[in-house]
Amino acid sequence: MKRIFGLALGILTAIGGFVDIGDLVTNAVVGSRFGLSLAWAVVVGVIGICVFAQMSGRVAAVSGRATFELIRERLGPRLAVMNLGASFLINLMTLTAEIGGVALALQLVSSVNYLLWVPFAAIAVWLVIWRVKFKIMENVAGLVGLCLIGFAVGLFLLGPDWGQLGRQVLQEVSTSTEKASTYWFYAVALFGAAMTPYEVFFFSSGAVEEGWTTEDLAESRANVLVGFPLGGLLSLAIAGCAAVVLLPQLIGVTALSQVMLPVAMAGGKLLLALIILGIVAATAGAALETTLSAGYTIAQFLGWPWGKFRPPAQAARFHLLMIICLVVGIGTLMTGVDPIQVTEFSVVFSAVALPLTYLPILIVANDPEYMGEHVNGQVLMVWGLSIW
Amino acid sequence: MAFWTRIGGLVLCIVLLAGCSQQSSATDDLIHALTETHSAIASSILAIQLYDQQRSTRAVTDTVLGDMAKQAVDAESALEPISVDSEQLKSDRDAALAAIQSGVAALFTSRDNFSQHGAVDTADLKSADQQVNAVLNQLRASR
Image (tube, rainbow over all chains, first blue to last red; front, top):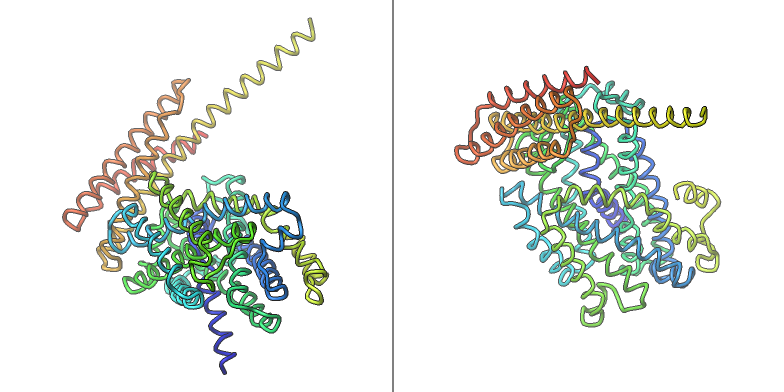
């Protein structure tokens, strides 16, 4: 019974934790401009993140070590530093976008300008990382993030023409204002939004934090293979809501506040409150994960003590690094740069730098010296290579 | 001689093509700015209607109106760097600018009225949207 409860909790957390500011914004933008014609990019991205997340979880469970420790050892410091540089910069950009996302969501509740919320959001993230246990932090953010299921409820309440939505999935929506280059730009952005590198680093480091062994592999595989695709469906529901309400009125999403309009139309204030709570949880959860990932990547690469399972005094450089990253994120947002633009850049760079960020995981998971009997099979190797 | 004639012809073609593409690019920029303004106005009208129907909160409506006013200002600023090298383009640019400015004015008035009184008449916004759409359709037809 306890095992079933743990499995259900893990899957629910994976669903709630799948959507972050990148998924929210990119899916809403795409839905409002192209309908569901780019749903295929979400599907490809979800397959990609499933393949690589379960691979990195398996590496951590088998070796008891996290991704960057192994990457440096397997590839050598020179090659690994390229991977580290790309991953760290994208992660920092994503962290900035997530803090901005929390602040924007709080503005929707309070009318207070998001810039005033930015320092509070960042300090709250730091306090949670400092004080709250890993498991509690992960589960609370993931479970409250489930409020985003409200987007799927909203889509049903809007009563769309399902046949028309289905036709959008199968063919490119041609609007007089969109070019083919824009279509492909957003295809890449959607792929990048689903495959942000921090998810894999967090997943692998989290496996070490929670002390996974090979006995936990089935559970972790179920979390990924059930939780992430359901999270992908949430992403499609966000695009669907925008496609039903905003696309016909030629409203292109450029702000988080516009994402609320279809929700309010569908379910009124109650659904609106639920979704805003979900956005705060999803972006705060992702801010926690990206902040931790910033610490994980550098600390694991340089061999510093790391992890929330250690008291902060025993992993001082790991914690200092996270504080510095948060300060950089606050500083960037305080320049007045639009958090939505930061988000768009971060998802596009995630996709562009994909060969640098994901190849080392593939190499380690393909190496029988590290993985023993749990080395990638032929099918997984082909999947991984084709996505890479 | 024939060689230089060919080179001259090639250069002339490139200049003409570059000129045409610049004209086309400038028109695209105008269309983009107008589309952004229409989107901002339509979002604001929808936000106000949802608030009037008690389906949305004051904070959300306030935020939408603030964001959309900013978006329209950005669209207006995007017109500044467009260089005008023909009478037709100048006329198009002036019409687009006038429509966008009426949109910006309507958006700011709506935002201010809503934050002060919690209620807005959408007539000004709808009128500005009609003006924007008229210029937008005209430019799309001419493209």
